Image 1 (spheres, rainbow, N blue to C red):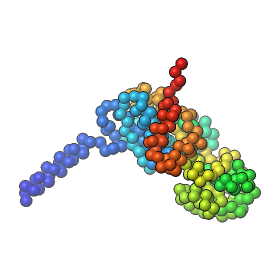
Image 2 (cartoon, rainbow, N blue to C red; image 1 turned 120 degrees about the horizontal axis):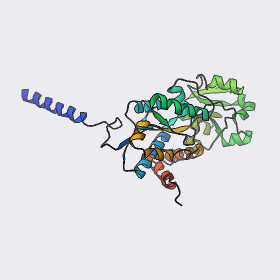
Image 3 (tube, one colour; image 1 turned 180 degrees about the vertical axis):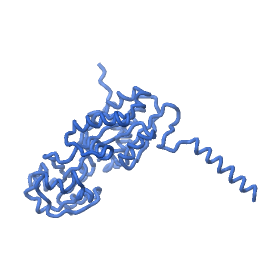
Image 4 (cartoon, one colour; image 1 turned 45 degrees about the vertical axis):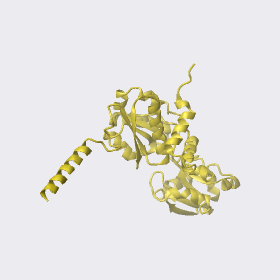
Length: 309
């Protein structure tokens, strides 16, 4: 009996020693001294963009890249950088960062928002906030092609004349949220919808496509916009603040590996909202792995290398 207990203690001690010497995936301690840790979100879009950064670095350098995928929120991604568990976060969103990180009201001027975040992240966290990749993943009102064509709908303001007849499906938190929620929307646009239904945002696309709803609020880059042949209405009054997708990294990793900076700069301005929507569609509707979508996109664009003279 005593021998068995001694054996268990030895096994337990060896196990603890082994685990102490091995970093858990995504929690720092990559193999060797040249490992870059890239954090991404758990959305399709988050997986595509983080895979894109990973593959770009692996293609152009000899560095190892550890992908920390499926982080639940941008706050978790931010903490990974702050805590030293990640070196690069891709993507990060301007509208989310200014509200969630700095607890400030988002500006509706995209350029001013970007400039402010770049300065604050550098000063407060020693992070570099890259210019936008070109797309904006913000809230957007959507209708079917049939309704858009029959009623001549192109902008949100175009809904006003028929708004009292419409069934509208919204993310349940948006209905009561201050700042850019439904109460503020009614004041800004000057109209309300006939009936409003709180829904999980992942369900709104099928709901409007099937005719259960007439208008819904979804995400502008979601691939299900294409899957369901929906029309995104222009926010002609600029009600929603900018949610531009960008890459953020620590200055520490850029100083350690200076060749990372020009690589990350290659992604600036390369993916507009429509293109991001198409990339998400390829993953969600065609059931391609996000990493494959990222790889094919990079290969099609020659990894954004400059043309040789």
